[in-house]
Length: 361
Image (tube, rainbow, N blue to C red; front, side, top):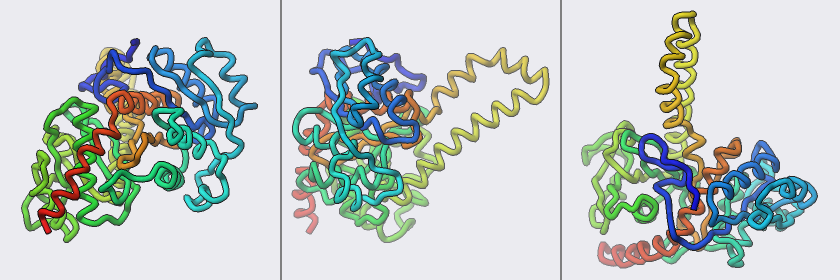
């Protein structure tokens, strides 16, 4: 299998490491959603199959638009089109998407997973509509109240997984507990980490810090069968001291967007400083290899692909503004999780949730 090289910092574009000698994977790609349209989606799919000989992609969307684009590729046996007549816009609610657009590219792609015709779905569409539709079609695993959005972000040792990132702006302590179990299972599977360190995001590491939600969740996690290390502050997320960071969707989404903004700020500052004068431009030429590696390590596109955990099927959310490189990475995330049977691993892990909850009560 042809794979992408490992990124500096220990992360490959397939989140974790290369997966060899595993079963072929079929990914249903919602090709009509996102800011850049079908042509960008097809470009990403073409690159993904070129780099992964055991990957097939079903491009879901308007056949009249997609078929001419696919016919130009050199992988006709591994790129196919499945027609869908509608598109969910970014402004539409989950209720409208589910009720009024049953033939949307998003819904049809998820249906292909439900029908067993695809191993995973990838979409750059409306997050609320994607989560609502996926939950309605695929249902949640036993012991899981609500699905959570989880992605990897860079840290000093490679990457850390954070959840929830926006699916649940209000959560209960029990749900944070469930997020921790699912996040630990994901890190264990995709990173081949037998005991990922799980931390609960808080404003301090002391037991008295935080609101009632995190303090009550901490009590549950102290009794969980996880490698739980307690509260972690925001700076520790990036210092390699934790493998899974658990929070509610409101805080998690703010933290993620802030991280992406800081990465762009650093890149912008470097570009500005290295173009201030002829001497600075000369220094930039000398430092170009180092700067290129730094940009690559903090490039949000290479961490694109957030997993919707807790469902009975694999769904990966790509940024709405994702370009071809970012969408390709989301496809690779889905491929690795499918090959490593993430849903089954989470199902096994969550079986302990109800048992432990009974013991606590």
